[in-house]
Image (cartoon, rainbow, N blue to C red; front, top):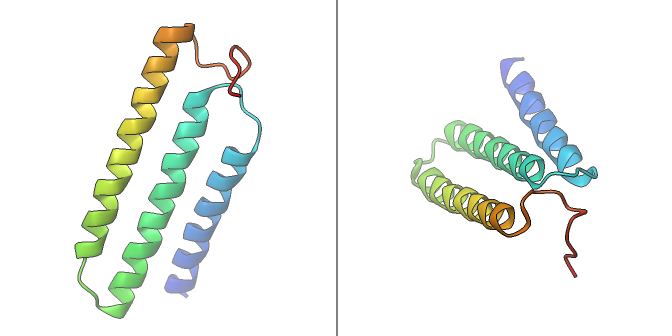
Amino acid sequence: MKTQMMKLVILIMFFIGNMIFVSKHKHLLIVLLSLEFIVLSIYFLMMYYFLMMNYDMYMLMVFLVFSVCEGALGLSILVSMIRTFGNDYFQSYNLL
């Protein structure tokens, strides 16, 4: 019962993160936060399955390194956009 509830919570976290990412938001910061929420749910899922299968946690450290790099890249893009355009609205500039 406890493992089924844990799987359900992780699955709900993943789908909520995807729904926030897919919905149309004005700010880039909200999109980046939803991406980090998706990465966090994937991390919990990997940790759950590695614990259930008695694998070592080395792959989780590699995943954390890549997720931190992804977060730092997102923040650097956000800072450069705010310095260039003055805000993080998607409507204020043309992405094409």
